[in-house]
Length: 530
Image (cartoon, rainbow, N blue to C red; front, side):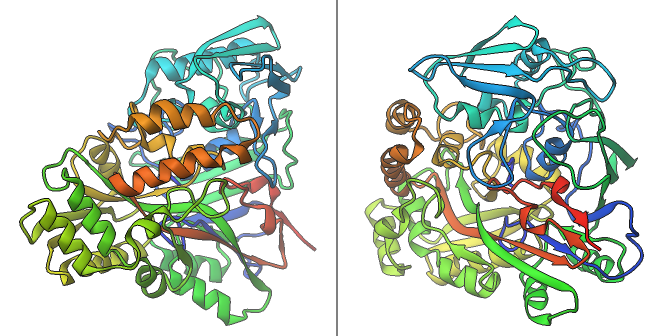
């Protein structure tokens, strides 16, 4: 998310998705429910098949995949415990959390009419691991040793090490079931083809290798746990939130999501427009700075610690995000087991004197030349403003000579994973709502960021120990230890935690359920009232 993807998956803060439903206007009609978004789905050299589950690892892309593919399990309307979808039942076959068995529903079939069997499940997992796409979600499947299919409807996963989070991992699109007759087992496809068995089938309008409209039609052959409340949903794409808002007000779209500005949220919150209500709820989506710990500028821990000592999160969330997000002092956000304010505990309030002492003790010459890089078209228009504020906070100390640069997402993501940027801004929408997913993806071999940072204590002790706990509340102590280590080493620096906003007119129902606990879009919940 991750999004998650990349995550993660961006509205009020760098991340928080916002959905706004409007009952006025005739443009959306009484047919498809139309969602507007500033997301971009395009075919590039680095992403030749954006909707291929072996490659897609972005909140916007996953929103499409959740609607068009099935997984054995999926997150429910609310809550964090996965429930069966393509599976009829699933469970552990041993006490060590190393063998997981699922029985498929009978009569499943893909959108092309082909039968869906256990062999397709095995094919899908083996394919993602074989392709091992650099910016894909394969890390979520890396602990699978082998997949067996003792029967047409039986699937058995053998894990390399115990992992109590495995049911949540196979509820993500990383484990989406593809048709073994329609996908190459060793390479990605091209374009925007989807052959799935999810609640919707997919139709796209494409121009210049970019999707201009997504059409989700209710799949009459779908068998799973989702109850679809509409016959069709469309997604339309806008260059900026201003034009998207204009389309909403004119009635050309019913909803808008990703990405609204704080100013828009403020207007909707206070406007009292007839027939429109703005719903606000907590979210586990986070924003953070990532460091290339081998880059000469930030290789020394003292430099990263000095940055952590200077950043004023309160000012960022108050002034740049107008309190549509909350300061975050831990990679594990509030509301998730194991959260603690590790960075606040270590660094306290922003202090130039303390930052200067850190740099002086490490014999670092000041001012340190630094470039902060952000993506200009992925996390919302407020991102650029926030990075200018970060620049000012660092430069006002006299300890850094900071520049900022904005890069389009299609270039930013592959280049950041290759280590091109010393310090860069990222968002994270959780793949699944568990503390594991806020620590493990950023640590160790094959981590999501492509970061060279390694910590044996976290990778070899704390995470493996935590994964033996089926009762996830008991795993919190391991992640609190991990957070203290991250606060000291600063390979990542949490900034803020987003919120969910949903504005719905009286003509749109289901707005309170349109985002689940992992910030996934659930378009099947939307309907039209009387």
